Length: 290
Ligand code: URA
Image 1 (cartoon, rainbow, N blue to C red):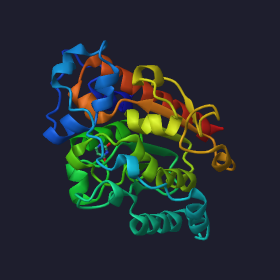
Image 2 (cartoon, rainbow, N blue to C red; image 1 turned 60 degrees about the vertical axis):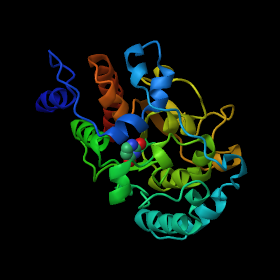
Image 3 (tube, protein in one colour; image 1 turned 90 degrees about the horizontal axis):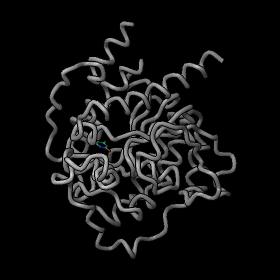
């Protein structure tokens, strides 16, 4: 009951009249939720005039090299004694390989991810924003503060979940990651997932949802139901059939990115996100009592 009251207060789900949208930093308001806005023109026409610029294509997108071989990352992390050391070794690999160097040199810090190496619940966002770039930590700006409230409302804390992004560096102009940029960085996200083996992943926004689920469906078609990662072989996923071998099957719940929620702070959107998160809570609760 207390949890419910706290949750409704945090997300404004039950409160009428609805509160004003929290102020959002310009950079996050403009950058992160672009694809949701593009994907939902009918449902949220009122947001279109303020819609962010479409992603600026990377100038050298056509010439990006192949991504690092997932098998070599696996071999390195598997040589480590425990999950935290595997994540540390993976981060070192990322720093040496620096896949972002092919499309991004204007960032301050790598934002690799943080949280519990054995988390049951993992959140995957899009790319670091300004605050994340400055601090080297994921989701610490306004969208991150909302995400943290959601996590607490779910009965977890930042320390007990794992939070990371598709891209580990802030994109130039806060642009939405191109599929090529995501492809170059994907092996590191895949390996983060394989090391942590969460019971559930919440993908925040379309880039993470599309990358992990091998789909281009709009969020309204993805959210509110469970998906499997790795996706079925028919999906054009980032993981080949061969690589999927031995990969644990993990349940994925896509939902709106918190930056999108801040921009489109309607009761309807808040209810949808909270309903998605409640499905996650129920599933994890069911797992732990099994
Ligand atoms: N938006 C994201 O997708 N990730 C962050 O870390 C911050 C904002």
